[in-house]
Structure formats: C-alpha cells, structure tokens
Image (cartoon, rainbow, N blue to C red; front, side):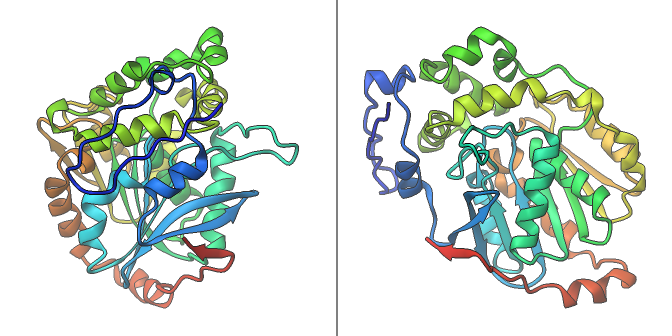
Length: 337
C-alpha cells in the first residue's frame, strides 16, 4: 500500500498533517514521491547493482566522499557540504536501503540483504562507476565503518580519513535498531510501525533534541516509511555483528586521520573514539560536549571548523602528486535529476 502526501518546499512553511494510516506506518511513502521531495539541485543517479543510487556531486578540487549512517541519508551532511563545496569537490550518496535510493534487489526481485560483504561490493562498484581513483573519505556511524574498511582494503585510494561516531568495535545495538532482531518486529514493521517510535529514535541521536528541526524530523520519518525500507532493515539488522570485525587492521591505516565524536552519543559509546584514535597511527581526535551521534547535523558549524583545519593540512609529499592526478572523476552511467 502507498500513500502520496505533498510536503511544501517553501522554507518555514507549516508541514501538512499526515494521514492516520501514514502515521501508523500502515501505508508507505512511494519511492517516486521521495525522489520528488528530497532530491537536490546537484542530485544525480547512477545504476549500481541493478538499482538507481542517489548521490549529489558539487564543487571542484580535491575530492571528498561523504557516507552517512544507519537510517540516515546524504542530507545529514547538508550543513557542512555546502560550505566545503566552495573549496572541494564533494560527493555524498544515499546508502541502500536508505534515503532516496531505497533497497537494492536481487536479480530475482527479492530485497537484498545489506550485510558487510554486500556493502563492500556496493561501495566498490559505486567508486568504480564514478571513476573515483582517490578521495578523502568522511563517514558517520555505519558510513564510518564502510569508510575505514574501504581504506584498509584500498590503501592507495584514500587521501585522508575522517570518522564521525563510527561503528566498528563490539557493542550492544541501540534499542531502536535492536528491535529488529525480534522476529515479530521484522514481520510486522513493513505493515505497522507507528511514527512516534521513529520520532523517539531520531530525537535519541541528538545530544539536545531541541536542535531537531521539524522538517528534518519529517524527512527521517518519511525515509523510514519509504516503500521497502522497513523490510530491508528487517533483513539487515540480524547481520549486524561488530564482534566479527577485525579492528586490529586499523593499525595499518597510514593516511592522515581524524576522529570526531559527540560526547552525548547514546548509540555508540564515546569511549570508542579513544579506541579508534589509539589504533589508527597518528590519528587526531575531537570530542564535542553536548552533541550526540550525528554532530555534523546537530551543530554543523563546530564540525565544519575542525574539518577545515584538518583538510587544510597538506597531505604527505609522496601522496600529493598522486592525488592531483586523480581529482577528476567520470560520471559514466549517471544522469542528472
């Protein structure tokens, strides 16, 4: 079942009420409606593993690739990407099964299970499709895990590495994610998931929920209620076992690295910031008092200041020439939206 509801684009305009069926999660927001509402002027699509993957490509210069976290979207970078795009080329994407991209599907049409091997295949294919030979990776939460894993597997393809409240070390899943380990929740969520649960989960990732703007909260709700997303999450969550990850390989990361963390992160323990900084040789670390799991969205100004200072540092001489030769990336198989 699908529900099509129009959200005005005018800044500050009151958000229209959702129907009772929509608020209960009985209906889903069609993917085409999400595409119409949440693409941006720089939005493009590229076919990856049989699906149209949404990404935004802005600016010029040294290439930065931004990868968001669980149940988020490329919009979480809006507050920092616009400013960075004045000096850099910034690419950010909607990871499946989230955002405008939504779930990937197998050749038979079934929803793809987004486990770590599938994410590795996905991000490798995305980089190849856009012709990205070398870039600075900036990842948050699940996107941080994908970023450091990529840096370990492709040692000559990463210029710098920024991890923001990154996943990777063994931990108990946040309650709002762990719910999907229940077979009953996995079965019922695609047909019934009340909006208040999503509201509570989104507020929980902010250090100060008062910073959460109504349009941002609506975006999270509609993406979570997007067609196919809840079923995909139900397949994905049981595969999230960080105890299986080899974090000792972080000791082999030999690129300039920065670890940023919200001191009020309720999803991934702030103590993990010290673990990343300890294992990655020479990594710098910043802890943000009062901020939560997505500091770059909650207070982009503070994060932007540290990103600029870090990115302004010249790369090691042995890497600088290589990076200059690889700034241009092809967009074969992509089209503007």
